[in-house]
Image (cartoon, rainbow, N blue to C red; front, side, top):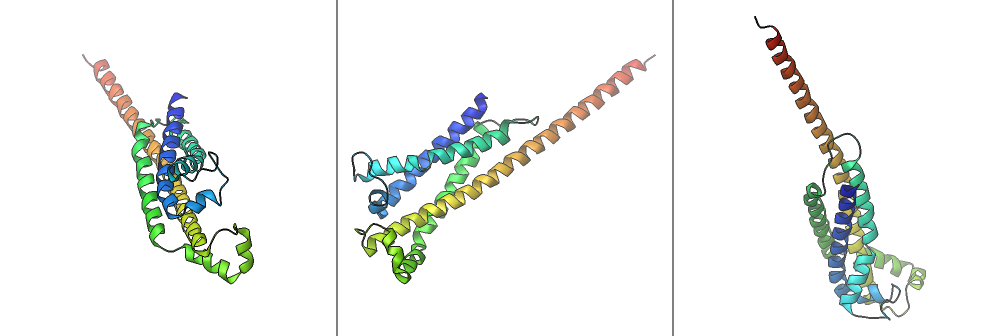
Amino acid sequence: MLESLKIILLCTAGAIVFGIGIALYTVQVSPEHFTVTHRPVFGGTRSPLLLAFFWGMMGTWWLGGLVGAAWSAVATKGEAPRMTWRELRRPLVLVFVLTACAAAAAAIFPGQSLNMALVETYPQMRASFPSELSDDQLRQVFHVEWIHSVAYAVGGLLNILVWFWILMERAQRNASDQEMRRRARETALKVQGESGGGP
């Protein structure tokens, strides 16, 4: 139970740190994404630092908790040798590094252009966004949403892959343990037979 809690806390803390890191960048790209298209926080503050910390945490803590719960379930339940939170630190860091690379690529690739093209093609879509946003601001809002969407998608896929890796790693360890126990029994029986068959 304690080990499961440690895994959940590890993933939750890691997700929050990662979320704040992404938000610290994207709030510079589009402050309006965090002020105009989100509800006001801290009395309507426009401080990039406060907005990044608040929305970075709010957007990731629950996801980190879900990931941690899934990882802890496959890492500690069942009869196979359990994995500890320390063994999952490296896979978690790898997930964050690869997700950050994907987000960086999304920041370079103009994926927001598709959304903007849709708005320009179908003017009625423009009404679903706050009227105070200029086209340039809306384009930057789409840019941030594109970055966040890619990060969520890639991070989700990588976490599923780690989930399967944990299952395979535990199965392999279980098979190794069973083989070692089998050899130990064979050795014990052999020694017992040799000692019982003496003059």
